[in-house]
Length: 199
Ligand SMILES: Cc1cc2nc3c(=O)[nH]c(=O)nc-3n(C[C@H](O)[C@H](O)[C@H](O)COP(=O)(O)O)c2cc1C
Image 1 (cartoon, rainbow, N blue to C red):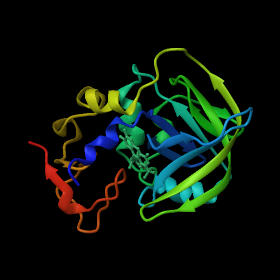
Image 2 (image 1 turned 180 degrees about the vertical axis):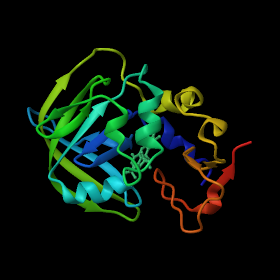
Image 3 (image 1 turned 90 degrees about the vertical axis):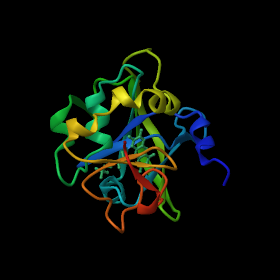
């Protein structure tokens, strides 16, 4: 592969995927169909706890992050596991049909799960949007914007108190003393060999 970073130029946003029990930051979101109740897909890594939660729940929500999103939201939902902490205790939410959505977002899409397509590393969950609201008309954060500004959107190594290991394929950062042998990047699915210690 000459340069897999070309995928960063696919225009997509940054969202907080939530369901009962937790959630995570996702960018792999797509509108599948149009109309009043469009189908929306989201690819969730099998290694994420959210994957298990989505398998157990019938509804999920996607809160759209704006460019001025609080970095704490990205930190909480994108670099921690719902198994280890109550992510909802760390940011203000409101309920959409029992699913917590992020108040400090541009709005949300509430979806009823209609399908789950298994791929090698991720499951593509497809939901029908049954409710939605717009909280703000500020600019949505694109994945490209996140990549350009992730220095200020994510905490540094010293703030985390752990070593930062960067996935050389997609830029995802793993925090820990060592990357575990069986670790798979939650974004691109590649293993330990692709991670380099952040200088
Ligand atoms: C900008 C960004 C985009 C991400 N996109 C995805 C994604 O599309 N799918 C996914 O499964 N994980 C994605 N992640 C990784 C998860 O948010 C992360 O692994 C999270 O800690 C999982 O939490 P959980 O174990 O509670 O599910 C992304 C993280 C960041 C920071």
